Image 1: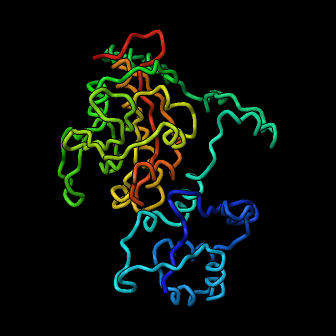
Image 2: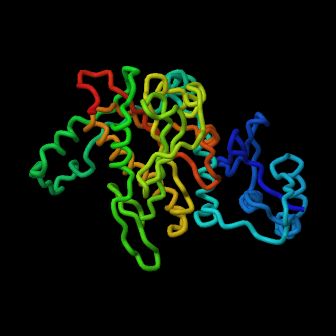
Image 3: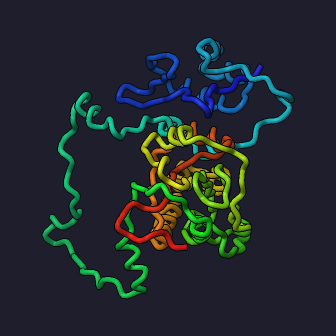
Length: 356
């Protein structure tokens, strides 16, 4: 018999939290949380992929703990062809470790607070006054300060940096295909490659990426782009093409993916940054690799936002992306997950229209 941790991508599953008293485990179906131990958590972590029951029972937790986890439906009997004949391939979590797996498990199921924030704060009690943002060293009498000389480069770049804003209101008009294509291409396409010996031939793009792994893939949920059928598109960064995945969506479905922030209904397209973790974890096998993924997504999305500004496209970036709903909609693999999204459209501002 084999066991596998019950943790479905398409709906909330087991959540582990850490409080001053230790580890707690909860599931939406229970309605309560239970205290657990690091030994039990080790069993759960190892059972993310099929693992032999006898092997688990022989550990210090013993068969009793395994049997109890099966009773609670936390561990589920797995039946698949070729049991015992082959071990599953390593996953990024095997490299990054239990701490990162628990953080990812908890973080991507965290409820997003937007309109209800004030109500929530009143209920739980407001925290201490927010500290003012001040320089760290100015209070020190002997702190050295060096005045920067200012900008002496391309004035177009300086103007672009000064003009960039998050545009949360759109006219509801279409986004020209040429504009969407230019934005995606200039941000994500492979501009050249370099031979990194043992690490292989690495792509070079407009933004930096840890170790040149470039694990961030671009997808576009197209709503109103003349020439493109409404649907989910994958950007092939080597061939510089948008590939129609054949997946279709409704606005309500997409709105759920973006935590019902109102980004969807007047936008023309939603750009989604997806992490293909195996690409990154192959080289970075410690927990910091998980942080690198978010940093690299930030590089890419900021470039996209700046380029959108140059074309007159309104851009609204968010990391409030429902991992389960978005992964289900886009049919992502188990080693992929969305990191951020950007709504694109004609901005409802004083600026001119989108560049043709």
